[in-house]
Structures are given as C-alpha cells and as structure tokens.
Amino acid sequence: MSESAVPLLPHWIDGAERPSTSGRTAPVYNPATGVVRGEVGLADDAEVAEAIASAERGFSVWSGYSIAKRQTVLFAFREILHSRKGDLAGIITAEHGKVVSDALGEILRGQEVVELATGFPHLIKGAYSENASSGIDVYTLKQPLGVVGIISPFNFPVMVPLWFAPIAIAAGNAVILKPSEKDPSAAVWMAAAWKEAGLPDGVFTVLQGDKLAVDGLLTSPAVQSISFVGSTPIAQYIYETASRHGKRVQALGGAKNHMLVLPDADLDLVADQAVNAGYGAAGERCMAISVVLAVEPVADELISRITDRIARLRIGDGAGGVDGEPDMGPLITDAHREKVSTYVDIAEQDGATIVVDGRGFTVPGNEDGFFFGPTLIDGIPTTSRAYTEEIFGPVLSVVRVQTYEEGLALINSGEFGNGTAIFTNDGGAARRFQNEVQVGMIGINVPIPVPVAYHSFGGWKKSLFGDAKAYGVHGFDFFTREKAITSRWLDPASHGGINLGFPQN
Ligand code: NAD
Image 1 (cartoon, rainbow, N blue to C red):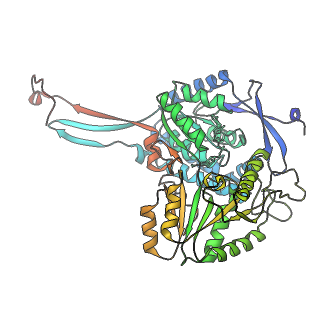
Image 2 (image 1 turned 90 degrees about the vertical axis):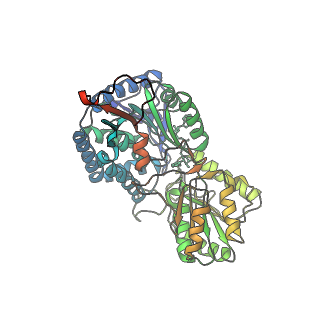
Image 3 (image 1 turned 180 degrees about the horizontal axis):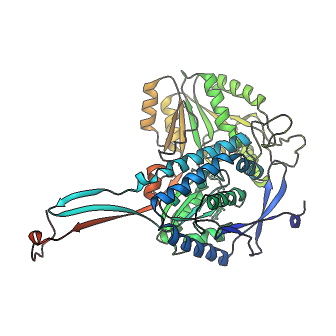
C-alpha cells in the first residue's frame, strides 16, 4: 500500500479529532502483516501550544465540577470501556500485534484503575483536627495540580495511560496524553469515550508526536506534572528535564526481571509460568521474565520442560484466523526485530548455547510480518550484554546457580529493579527473599506480580525515577496538592491580645 493511500491518524484536541497540519508523520504498521495502516501526524510547536491552551480551558471548567458530577463521568466511562472492549482490543491488536485475549487483559487491568478512581472522594478528602490549639482548627484540602502530562510506551497503549488518567481526572486535573507514535489510535478511541461519558472538552487531550511534542510538555510552564513510562534512558531524560522545569515527575523505566527457582519448586508449574511470562506478548512487557535463575540440580530438567512447551506454542497474527487465536504475535517493528536478533547473536558470540533459536522465524502467509520465534538460551555469561541489558523480545535465558544466595546476589547486582519472582514450596525461603531482594514488585509463585489497582505499581533503581509509583494511593497523592489551613473564629472571650512570640499551644 502506498503511503499516500493510508489515513492520517489525528490528535484529539478540544473534544474532537484534529488532524495534524505539521507536515511531519510517522508510519503505523500492522506488525502481523508488515503493512502500513496509517500515518500518524507528529505535532509541531503550534500544535503543542494548541493542545496545552485547550487543556488549560478544560481545567478551568472541570476543576469546578462537583465531586458527584465527576463521579458520574467516571462511572459512565467505565461502562463504555467495559461494554465496547472488543472494539478497543481490535485496535490494540491491529497496531501492537499482541493477541486479542491479551489486549482484552490489558484493557481489564486499566479498567481496574478506572473502578478504583470512581471511589476517589474517599481518597482525596482532607483531614480535620478540631481544637488543635485552644479555639483553633487545622484541616487539609487536596486540590488538583492543573494540566498534567502523560507520556506512554508502545507496549500497553491502553493500560499504561489508564494507570494515570482516571486518577488525574477524578482529582480534577486536565490530562494531555502523548501516546507512542507506534500505536497511537487506542488513545483517540479513549478520548472519544471520555467525551461520550460526559467529560468536558479539553480535559482529555491526545497529542500525537515524537520528541518535539514531549519536549514541549516537559518545558511548558503550564504543565504541572509528567507521568512517563518507557525505556530507562528516556525515563532518566524525562525525569531530569521535567524536574529542571519545576514539575512533579514520575518516570518509570525498563526492566530485566529474574525468576529464582529453588530445587524444591514444582517444575511443571515453573516451566508453564516461565513460558507464559517469557513469551507472552512476545516478551514486550516490562514485567516479562527474561532470566530464569535455576538453583542446581534443576536446570537441565527445567530446560527440557520449557523446550517441550515452546514446541507447542502457536505463533501468528494476534487477530486470529481459521485456526483460532495463536499464543503469541509479532514484535512491534522490523527495526525492533533486528535489535532482538542482534542480542541473540551477542549471546552466541559470548559463548551461550542457543537451545531454541527464534532468529529468521516466519509465519506462512504472513512473511512480511515482524515475527520472531520464542528463543531459549542456556549458559549465558552474566557479563554478556545479552544478560545485562533489556532485550524486550521473546528471549528467555536460563542461568545456573548453586545456591539461593548466588541467585539473590545476581538479582541485586542488576541495574534494574522492576519485578522478580521466586518459585519454591519453602515459605521461610520466600519470606527471606521478599525481605532481601532489591526489587519493587515481587511474586511468590506468581511470575508477573503486577499489583492490583488499590496497591501501587513501581520498581526500584533504574526502573523508576522519582518517588511516586503509579496508581493506588501513590496516584492520588501525585495528582493532588495539599493545603493545610489553620483557622480561628474569634469571639470576644478568646481574643488573646498582642503577643509577638511564635504561636504555641
Ligand atoms: P520509549 O522510551 O522508546 O518511548 C516511550 C515514550 O517516550 C514514547 O511516547 C516515545 O514517543 C517517547 N520518546 C521516545 N524517545 C524519546 C526522546 N528521545 N525524547 C523524548 N521522548 C521520547 O519506550 P517504548 O519502546 O515505547 O516502550 C518500551 C520500554 O518501556 C521498555 O523499556 C519497557 O521496559 C518500558 N516499560 C516500562 C514499564 C514500567 O512500568 N516500568 C511499563 C511498560 C513499558
């Protein structure tokens, strides 16, 4: 298909689609076919300014809505999301490539945050202390920040924006979402749903773009906070730049998640979960497991069981076909597939054994799709870049260790601290692990421990810059600013006369 024949994918500004007139675009592919399905317009400075001005107007309207009215909008948005999730999942699969059931799972995890946000009055109400000093009451208010920016990655085009937007909106803010330019359409679908739910224009804006749009948000004095999710180098850049411009920032970065398998673990459970967590969404999850640390003597047996399971995986177009839905879809772009392939080359050059090799994998009938086969690596040196760096593809490495301590030390020596898991039947060992591991989210016989909406999501080290995690109570704290008020209503009897000392009880 020629590029001129494909649609221009728009922004959403002032309650309507707004096709970019910048003249700059980026191709959006269906990764399963390799066909360009649209060109997304990339904002220029004027479009960034237009989006921010609209959001400022939206904030002035929305922040005046009563709590009850805001709740009504959130409930309506939840109903639209729930009842039309099939349409949204289709968009995710067409642009991201993940299988439809996985796309539905991502929507559900986002919906959980919307549901949490419907109960926001409880989470943003202040506290009141009567008679803190004689005749003096002290109380707090939690107010919205204003215009807030969300910058999201390609791998969860619905769930990640919903980690932040429902809470920000519930708290009275106006959101500008800058989605990934690789799968930009789900954001516009959500914008239309918010409008249908009754959200005033300008309160949920979608600004399509690249670094230019991001930098516009990071440096604008009108934008009060930035919530970023993406790779670690960009997360660090976002954190430093937005902080320098006086903003509140939470910037979630990349990961390299290890699963520690103790010899007493149920190896069939471990093999199933390693395959699910290693190859689900083609490994394009920040909570994917990429390293299995097998405490000997279980490594050979585990590799054999994982290999058996890989042989049964079905790989194809995530939208399904005559044979039903496959287990795993393609990678996001051809360039990313090349990058993943290079990491497998590096592992091989560094002396690892490629037990199952996904390089050069094709799907009959979809030869132009960006597929990469599930890959299993044994004996990778822990100095190899293929071990230390995030690959973000369907590549699972098994590293043999002799003891729990050796495994723990490897996890703790990594630069990331997003997620990890231990598989064991020994409760004491699991309890020790949760205490000693330097990672933000831990699974005990659970491979992908993404916390539920009423807890918060966030890693340690280079997996999170800033001190506020996503959603849960952290989310409400991030998207509100507190005021403390000390109040005295004078009556003749309580008048204290002149006293220049510091106020005391
Ligand atoms: P990315 O860092 O390339 O892009 C993320 C966002 O930043 C996109 O909106 C993109 O347009 C923008 N961006 C890219 N380069 C930029 C630049 N130079 N300046 C300003 N903005 C820029 O990440 P991605 O490839 O879209 O997503 C995959 C990464 O996200 C992986 O590293 C994954 O681990 C990480 N991720 C982390 C979490 C988490 O919770 N920690 C969750 C999902 C994804």
